[in-house]
Image (tube, rainbow, N blue to C red; front, side, top):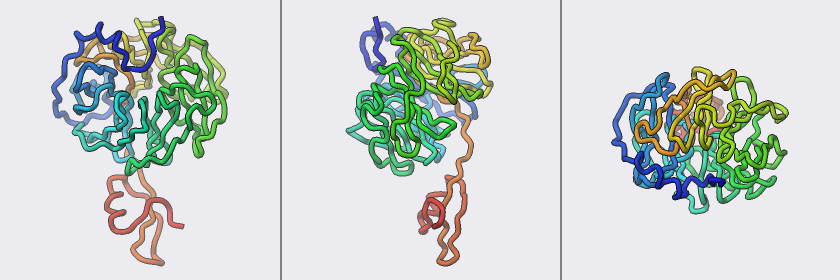
Length: 347
């Protein structure tokens, strides 16, 4: 029987309540390349984003939590270096300090956001969110969180129940249509539908997307087939089942990410693990995050903390005609905007 990827179904929760204990939040120092894991556990009113040690998978801490954050799903670091988290249960995007995990604010509060899944900051610096029940991709201004509209309109190109999204090497937006069994491609500037880039079988329910170091597209197929598909990153042609069905005990594939070691990490939602596979062959290596480690229940999306400073282009305006275009660190942006500079190149 198909287990529907709505992340808030209660039939499975009764099975896993034993793993659902709250985890006390600890302040820890920043460490590059640690793994952050979200989880779809709405039995825990303080379901945190958990942090695991690079290299070993050892549990470090409940990194980010909030009383309204249950069913934490999407994860992204913003240009400001802070952590943004979506929740499937509320129309909000939470913002946390990127080094300490301290809650900062509700970056987005949008009653029209029916059920967020994964989130990404685009090349334009704005935030893109898949709305699973709205069958759309919403866009929010990257500095203020103001709603900019549906970038991909509801049902465009046959999109049904989008889960993950990623901007490709070509600058276009790729969206996993969970119930359309497809990866759809949209113009990265306008959101207009381009084509069905990749298709699976009727039993393939795409839940996660990433472009690999080889330039190819890797697609997590959850629910029934429990594998990772690989498609040519340029043409969309099917290459192979990179991670074969149920390899290493994989059960309900959800998020996936290539790690700093070049290997592929995959959430196994129903076994409460993060599994690691050889990044070249797809062979199973180990359970990087052990079952239930740190109270982990139903892991969804993965994010390696491999941030790099993000520069911002501004028009520096000390007074005409001496204004000039500068590239500055993002953390200096607020100060420049405060004395009249504007974002973007001078015109």
